[in-house]
Image 1: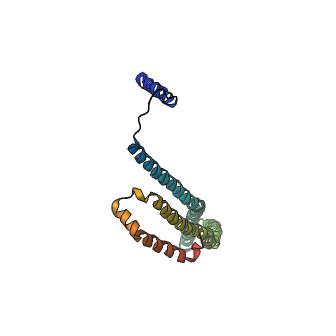
Image 2: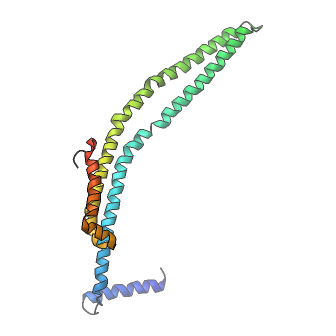
Image 3: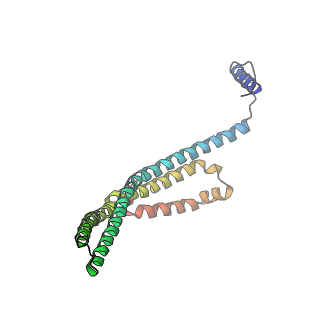
Amino acid sequence: MSWAGFKKNVNRATTQVMMKTGHVEKTNDRDYEVEERRYRTMESAATRLQKEAKGYLDSLREPISRFCAYFPDINECIKKRNHKLLDYDATRAKVKKLVEKPDKDVTKLPRAEKESDMAKAAYETLNDQLFSELPQIIDLRVPYLDPSFEALVKIQLRFCAEAYSRMAQVQQYLDADTREQYAQGVLDSRVEQVLGEIRDLSIAGTV
């Protein structure tokens, strides 16, 4: 802060103190003060709505993020399984070639067959594991994610209801056309229609 700015802050603070003690007369602008109070009311309502909306989204995002956190490890297992399959196919091709065209070194075929058996075992172990566990993971998505989607529907219902309630508080700040729709009940019917559709969903319950 510059020295000039510092002096201004000191002077302003001094003036405020002197106003409180009656040594300096305060200029009152009631028209402006009314507009500022209206603005502060709207600011407070909008800020609170923003914070609550973020909280609703975070409550939904967190369990889904935890579920998705398992995917990298699962994908790594799938990748490893595919690599083992390539290894197995390569060793099978090598055995087939030696069977169709025997090598002078008679030990090559037994070694190739042993290598192929080991590759087959490694592949089948991973393949069987994934074949067994992937369906389990897929089935688990229902009991794990359904509560999150149920929460989303309830969040939407609560958000719409609270947003409508807040709008009633700040409707005086809306433009003339919107205020007219509000006064005629047009907005009421729109909102009630949406809320009714949400309530008709069985997972919405009572909020």
